Every structure is written in C-alpha cells, then in structure tokens.
Length: 133
Ligand SMILES: [Zn+2]
Image (cartoon, rainbow, N blue to C red; front, side, top):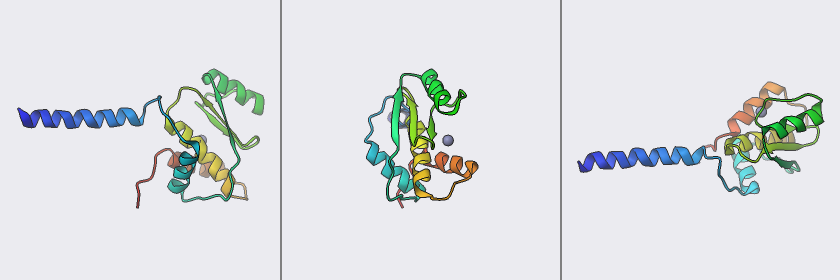
C-alpha cells in the first residue's frame, strides 16, 4: 500500500509541476525572462529596447493589431517589429510571453531582416527554457 501511495504522490507532484508550468498565474522578472530566452536561443543582442503592452483580453490584442497593421488577428499575442512592441493579454500562458520576447530578441540581434519562417521557429524555440548544459 505504501508503495502505491508513493507512486500516487509522485504522479500528483508531476501533475502539479506541469500545472504550474502552464499556469496562467505567474510572477516574472522581465529582465530575467529575457536573459533566459537569450540563453535558450543562444542570441545575445547588445541592446533590446522593446516595450510590453499588457491589455485586458484577446479582443484588445486584436484591436491593437488592427491599429498597427490595419487588420485584426486571431493570435493570442503578438510582437510588432514596426513599433518594437509586444502586445499581450493580462491572462495568458507564460510561454506566450516567452514566445513574443523571443521575437523581440531575434529582432534586436540581427541587423539584416530575418525571414518570417525563421523568426517564428526561433520564437517557438524560446517558449520553453533550454536545460542547463
Ligand atoms: Zn510568433
């Protein structure tokens, strides 16, 4: 019975960890987060001066997108290279913020324009912290 309980506890812990990882309720130091994204991507721009606009909901994200690009978006958040601005809703997964910071880091690092597909691949890679090596 004890073994079963231990196993159960382990499973419960794992579930809790996963739940925490994907929780919408997070506290973050933006400088630390950027550093971690840089480490994950192995891209260290000498300077990033993007700003983050936190809006109430996804509707507000869409309307900011419309303001900048003239058309709406279904994306949960976005990075605008035009304004060097991350627009993110108040409630979202932390990986969404990491994704958008990934875009901002890529934009700050490369002086030449980066193809859209590569921008997206790198931002996706930035979503999850790379394990220490
Ligand atoms: Zn993206």
